[in-house]
Image (cartoon, rainbow, N blue to C red; front, top):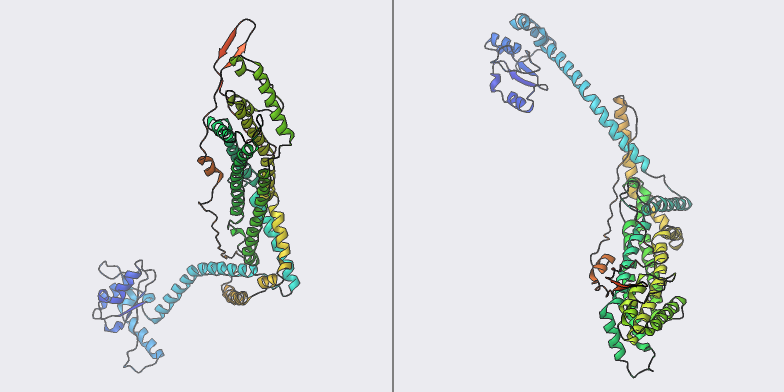
Length: 539
């Protein structure tokens, strides 16, 4: 409401200028012209009330003219009202404009109508805002747990939350997502095992190279005269096998760290937004995550020691009393004896190998790679190769089974068992976490007072009750990435692939003619071992 006297030009009144600036549509501004008896031009006052001329000030809600008392007049409100009615009865505005634009009664009625319209417009919005706030407060209060006032009640609640954490947060992360965005832990480990097998395969291929045969020849030459002739020098065999064992352990150590790092990163993911409204669970989750971290690290150390002990025992003294190793060496000896009986060099190179049930193309490659070297080098190289195949066969199977159990099958039961024993090991832990603290009590009281105030306002507005979800925030991030760690991918890239072994020509003999053909490239097949056979990966 903007007021001005009748003897002042409205266009020069600052309050109307400000009103036009802050209320350009004019839906919130009504003009009041006071001291109508002092208007120098009665016709101009009528035109301002009518707002029919373009040269007069325009307001959407219009103007109302009144005659009020001056400070010098000593009359009461009743007499002032009677005098105002008599004044406008004789004024042209009452007949030309109408009584709805003149007098204090017209102003009262107009303000009452405007207030009623404003209430009708604002109250639904106000009602809606009160409902939203009331729903939010009620939901926050509903999320506050009941006061666990006894130790037995707190312990029962702890076991309930621990069970919920394992079943609904940990276990679901080991399974593939419905939308296919994430794979299961079994599939992830399988991919890592395939990389592990490929790296071991490349270590095997080193035995087929000229470089390795020269290394063996040099080592044997350095031991001439130290041992009986026609016997493999034991120190050389042990040293060469220990070098391969070091390669095997380096790769296995990286595999162990890579697998456990993957599991730890998966379980430490802080994406628990769906449970953020559970106050008690959010208070326990940091401790639960610590238990998971400790469990996985202890499990990793146990497996690390187990597998490293196997390597240590193999290094202590190569144990060759094994049917797999003996069969391979005997087969080589038979092949070597047959090759000696053939004087023709071409016939010697084309001597067919009798396939046995456990043979693969690696044996073929090994035989052909040592055809034209010294017998001592042949026997030493094949002994290292046979022992290496024995090691990788039994060691990789055990490694795969152990890591699958430690990083997949046993994680949730192991963590669950640790969580069950925590109240026994730390008798005051449950009480300290689940007992209602001062902050919770104060927050509950504030929410209750706010709820009561909003319910009173809602009742005045004629509202109804509903519920809504509250928002709490739990943020705790653990960095799981460290580029300094060696991974299987980095190890595979660092290994230079050996040159392909020599490929002697293959000669086929018929009763009439002898035909020599260029040899077909021998493509090594992947190492086959129980538990580690490559299968298509479902994505």
